[in-house]
Length: 190
Image 1: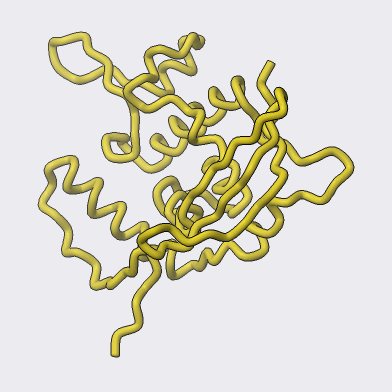
Image 2: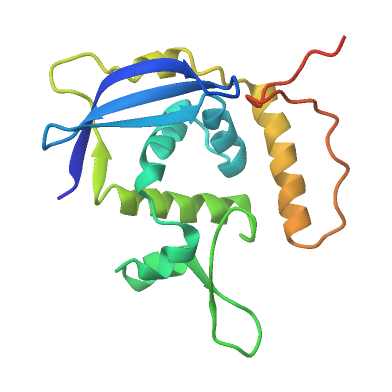
């Protein structure tokens, strides 16, 4: 059974480089606490990278990623054939070799999203972030002040597309004329 992680505090922090971050502190079953810090722009990045439709799903993904296996470890999952096939693809050519599906080598964003969702579902077999029973959901502060915009998602998706094309060895697309600050937000040009 998965260990339940109950958020007991959600706070805004600034990293040493000045990046606005969220810090989620969890109560563990044994009484210890665990902190998870991530840049506030991470939600917008996950939505751009994987074509996620909602802030809720992006938040769920981000909160479970620390416990997800890396794509290169996908073959370690004790999974049925369908799950394994969704996370690992057979390499083309004479060698029988397996390559983990990840954002840059997936045939499509849909394939990358499905493989990442499978890794998150696997992580939830070990830990699961849950709302405290009978109390307000502290994660609502992130949902209310997420900062995700359609323009931000489009800009980041263009960068993701360019990176995917470069990884595949295609002629690089022109770099979008976007000037982003360390938080991944568009800078105002003066």
